[in-house]
Every structure is written in C-alpha cells, then in structure tokens.
Image 1 (cartoon, rainbow, N blue to C red):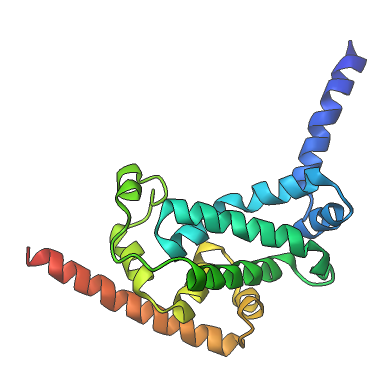
Image 2 (tube, rainbow, N blue to C red):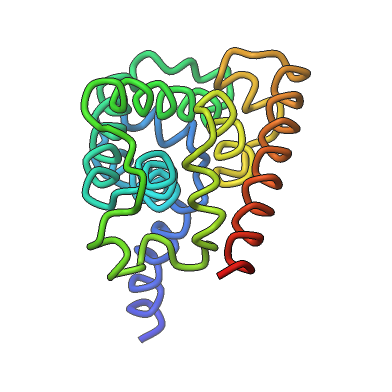
Length: 195
C-alpha cells in the first residue's frame, strides 16, 4: 500500500521539479531535443508574451498571431542562446525585435480598439482603458521599456540588455514615458469631465 502511494507520488514530484527548473535549464533541455521542456518554457511565458503582444497591437487576433510568431522565433533561435547569460533579457530582446518587425510588415496601429476585443474584454481585464489608450499612443522607443520593465517585470539591467541601451538611457526613456502617460491620462480625465 505504501509502495503504491510512493510510486504514485513520484510523477507528481517530477512534475514539480520540472516547474522548479530555471528557464536556462529548460532551454538546454529543449536544444537537446526535449519537446516537453520546449512546451514547459512556452507555457511559462505564454501569458506574459500574449499580454506584451496585445499591448503592442491592441488587437486580440493580431496579438495571437504575434505571440505565435514570437514563439516560432524562440524555437528557431534556441541554439543561439548563450547559457552563461540570463535568459529573460535575451528572450525579451527577441520578443521586442519580433514585435517591431511584425508591426512594420503587417499591422497599422488602430486608433480605436477593435470591436470584438472591446466586447470580450478578456485581454484588457484589469487594465484601465485610458491607460491602454495612452500606452498605445506612446512612441515604441518609450513603450517598449515601459512594457518590459513594468509588464514583463524585467529589472532595469535586463531591459537595457534587451534593448541594447545603457541603464541611464533606459531610466531616461522610462521617465519620459511616465511623463507622457501622466499627460495623456490627465487629458483623458479632463475630456471626460467636460462631457
């Protein structure tokens, strides 16, 4: 009886061990042909990547396409990852570059969110619509540091590595972006107050 319980517990503890593996270890396993490691890596990143894509494009269907493109690029470039360096900055640089290229090739920036995304509201759950609009109006040079630092939870050093900028440049862009966001949000409040 106890032996059966111990055997049943083994796969569960192995599953927890896989969850506890750092991303760099999953990448090493994935480059070695372990598709379970690839899937685990994708699952870990999926929500953050989709949120990042949605913040960039403001269209749920396009965000799904961009998310898929980011993961395809990740899979194709796993062999280029240097395991001696942190994974997150490398990955978010790849995601940011893929996003920039995607927007250049395919998507005009919508002025208003698509109607189907406004109806579902699932992609914006928990986000102030005025903030989403203000973020969309930011220049990508300011939007990317904001999204990487605040949304993807990267440190200033990781954001600087991701965007190939110095830490003072990142701080400057974050400061300017926050100022622009404050102004946009204040204008939105004023326009709502006059209605």
